[in-house]
Image (cartoon, rainbow, N blue to C red; front, side, top):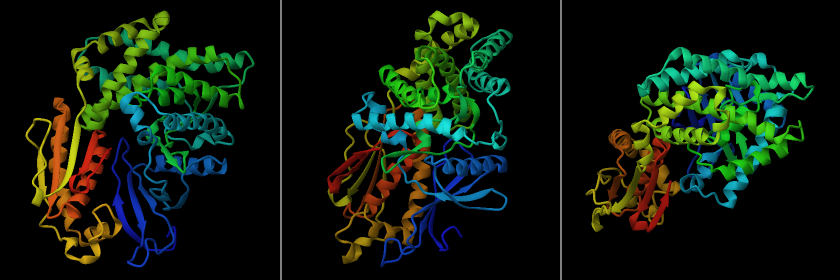
Length: 485
């Protein structure tokens, strides 16, 4: 046992792009104390690849020894297929900057956290490389031409071919080879000129969904695919993340922050850095589109399909701002230009995103009206669920409060009820996203609109937002509360 105590509730967490399974393990609780064990919640992980798990377990201990912000691993199975780690909470950087992502205008608090994160990246890459045994990395110890061509062909087969655009494969492969050579050339050029290497620990999937905000500091997770490689890759991954919606001025500000931190470890010329970075921006964008194509078109995961227009917009912007160097890989450039002009991507760009409204209400005051003009959506009746409102001790609480949550979850009826509701709503959300619909309404009613319906609406709103990444407006009508996820 990691803590020497029995676990309380074990709740599966939503999967994203990984095949690993995550569980939040809450400590044993009783009516006398919120946390009798004295231990915070933990995260249990069940992996599908021993080699990948081994890489993570090695890296997380190495980074912790270097004083870097990573979750602590408290226990692991002998076969390394299961481990228990520190729970860093639920605040992803992606969610922390939600307002800026949606509006394109980042307020100062969001910018400050982004500055902290990009500076922490420079330290993580350089300090993390000190004493690192890259032989422990999986599936490759080093960024090399083979891994570059794997990713480029991932784009070709999982995304480009799915567009059904005509192209000459041999000419495309020639430009893939040129791009791979350019990405690897910087390292050898610096070594020939007697300069310090800009190769260090390459995180490989450094983006805002893999950063947690804990006590106003960034903590890094999901780095098990890392290896030795060029530092540009992670900068491109972070600043050109498809749904981050960073504008050019903010990107440049964060690049300046990064270079200012980097100079404590190694010097580089800003113009030279930017000239090399643009090739990595292209490469990372193509790699991401390959991933979105596989996860979206083939695995039918809507979150990835939703991200495609943002990546295409990044690609359009790259094409607009890099015309002076088009001779590097002219056929690839021409092909990408034609691809971004396809009708399907223009339609994607014109679509307004789906917004889901989730209500709680009292049947005594009527079902909420739908002001979108669509006549309403799902209405779920919670009145058959065991009611905490029967007991006077719950009168002062709502379905957002721990005593009511514990009553409903210990009883269990509400959990069975919600599982069925999730299945119905999930199918509709997927279909609405595919068809470009903009509004969906989901309402939960109970007798007073205070306990059961409030709890169910909270859980449904979180489920929809976490599963599909769409905007959810949560309205507790009788409580006169509203917030946006």
